[in-house]
Length: 496
Ligand SMILES: [Zn+2]
Image (cartoon, rainbow, N blue to C red; front, side):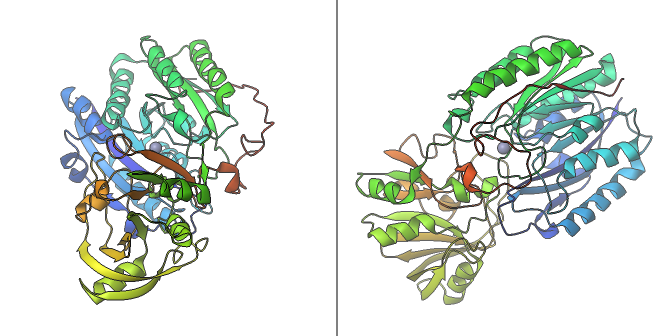
């Protein structure tokens, strides 16, 4: 009965969000909690448990730090987490047969650009060179040489918007069992592509990028191929190895891995200009929406908390106010002081407050007179993703045709959960500000007249050259439009 250690570190950062993420915001799950809360769920652990338990494995949940998406991790807090990880792992040295790591891949601190690589390096140091270690990553992960050096194999999501969490955990642990039981010897090849991308063409069901993923899945039909994937990275995680990457692991067949990764990379590169977001200028978008019958979604991907932004933007509403927008508007904001003021005033109370810009100084506070419609507190659950949201204090505030949902802490806007939990249905508003690049279609796209992708300022703007990367390798498309791609496959193998 193989003994499998499980551990995880999930945080996706935007280097352009000025608010650092702290230890206290992590959900630190230990031992039984990982198992108890994941069985049967659509999460990587849920899929991992299904496979490992069916195979009769003994599970050793060791450590898990679960964050969402945010600004950079505070460096001291990262060091504290690493110490905790080491302490949690040491007792298992020499006693386990394999390791499953659930990682995101786009973590970082102002001083450390590869926390996940370091975690795997530490795991090796503690658990030894011989123990098989497999890793699952988000499709937006930044794969690094250090990760590939210390992991036996990497597996990544095959969907965007992401829906295959459990399937990824399942594939990762099936591969772990093949290493343990069948003695397969993974050899990995990655091809780095100097391009960062965004936009509708990345949707794997309908967009151009879907063909890379379909090819990766096709490769996996070959029993010699252990894992194949394509990471589009989180373009806001400004770290040295930031780029798009194709990767393939095979059972000892480096040529096969190389051919597969090269084909994915070469097929991707000509589409780089089509894989940029089509954005409508802020002024134009508001004017256009004003002329529509509605309902309208105004997507503010630049302030997408699920990609690592602060959620503190008022940019679209500020422009609506400037233009005298004639329709009802529903918009979220993470603004601790506004949520607090509303709670102090109580339901039915009246307050005058400037909102937006308290966390992220790129926004100018917008002063409005509000009536406090309702008050609540978290946590709440998302509509389909298994990520409990901890908004702290929440308040629904109304000012004329504007309804603002203020939260004390950032929450994800990948669906309508924040609105619904506060008794608000976006269908009852002419316009809704959606702070997420893409939502599953049933949430907005299926019923709105239009979803306008607005070029507003923010830490996760899809207008990538506007962000000001300073750390990733250059030249990089689209910052340097003339960037040349010279494919250079890199091989990694732990069996020599
Ligand atoms: Zn992702």
